[in-house]
Image (cartoon, rainbow, N blue to C red):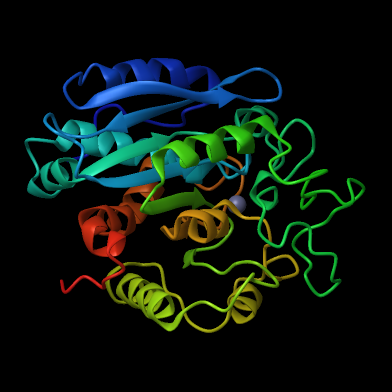
Length: 307
Ligand SMILES: [Zn+2]
């Protein structure tokens, strides 16, 4: 069922009312403030889980909008929250997810970037390069991060977790120790898994690699998100800006620090609000996140789901 709460875009001033409307599902939803942006805007989220003992549930973190102009990423995270809250008790999958998972969902990590329609935060930092994994790799072949503030778009910041938005997310992760982490972006039509870093800290163990491969394979076989070839080939095919691995990402950091199963969902190519109806795009992305949440216990055990 399409949730009634999602119609059109949710701009920064709309999010407190959205959070309050979700929190009206009081048995399922608890609102929280993750922290504040550079400009002092509250970064809002909701915890979604069924009534009862949540102690044994899988700890899931979902976010959107770490890149401010990736509007449809944030909209897809919002949609997922509303879909879960409104379908609990009506749809068997949504019900099962909230009985099994303890979901923490942040609507929009970079409200200043969203308000100004730019990728970076209000300090000009690319927040998804600001985590401490191969931070700011200066190798010129690693084109998607920079340690120079003179390089726009990919500036990693003066040091890891220098920004209030990333520091807040990292502190929240430290408390939660996520077992599954889904981060919604745009700019591609694909899923991206660790390592994203140009020079990863260590080679991925074969068992981890096999699980990520099984996720990519499921996504390719069951959704519109087709992953074929290397990141470089994908970037060329999709006519992206110069391709290159991304060091300092939140997903790599979650995988490195908490051995969480981390996935970037690139929900659509478009930046800004020019890509069409956000509800339609969120509905296209929904099967990926729903599948991941439904099988979160398997992922938490680093086991490929059988179904
Ligand atoms: Zn992004």
